[in-house]
Picture 1 (cartoon, helix red, strand yellow):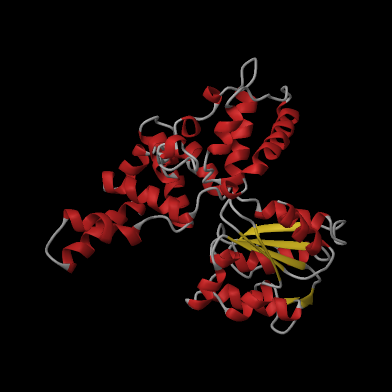
Picture 2: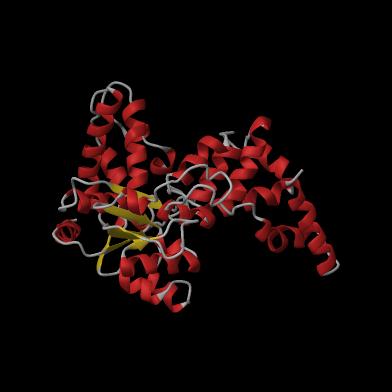
Length: 371
């Protein structure tokens, strides 16, 4: 942690662009906010945006703003995030998910500091002064090699680079993080600060933390608000920590290799066995970026393999009938409606006879989105 703190301190003393890398949930946004808070721009706002959580058609408007009438529902002029943060900092999370078109627009802005709102007069641009900090859980250089990410944009963003290791590689930070989260959530919920009983910290430090700091924070809040009288025992911890099943502990006793279920498997079990609704099991994790779009697609695809249509899928995921349209719109908005997976993953096992029936089967399955 001392290395990361030193790199954050160095970044705070200048205005150079920073690229923060690391797995989802390791604390990239926390690092970005720490840089801003210690910089000379601290008295001005830091504005954050998740580039993977917004459809590409809206991302340009979010970043650069729009003028009234530039598209449907544009009833008034709106400042983009770069103008809102003028003088401060903009944090672009998951910048590696940008489309080639958005990469080109961002590159142009980084080169001249000028923005043109969507629908604005061509050639009329506003100059803004913001510091750009970006983050990604991808290997951006590999994306450059694969021609999925522009090399010129990569060099513009990667002036100072901070690599944050996953929590399983810095277990010594877990006690301090727990103390911080316990105090924070005790103040928030008005309950006493919990104490750890014998063996509890050992369980927590031995766990592999696939969700990294976000998962630790979630569990700290859960045990803070649910604890009974007395110290927290290992049995007060979630089941995935008490009895990991698929590689959850990095240091198993006696050299055995027990592993914990993946996030996808755990969430499917919550919905299909424990009957927890999709909106409380999956939706919050995805919106908090604890769950990737790939994970969500896998969850929906596995459910679809069992049901074969969206209405049955909604029932399987405990979505109330009145929420069916919302469920479909959510999948479609985030590119997780699995039409791209149906033909290859499920229908080929149900239909035979060549491409013609296969295509018809995919269309029949997908038509439920519009029914």
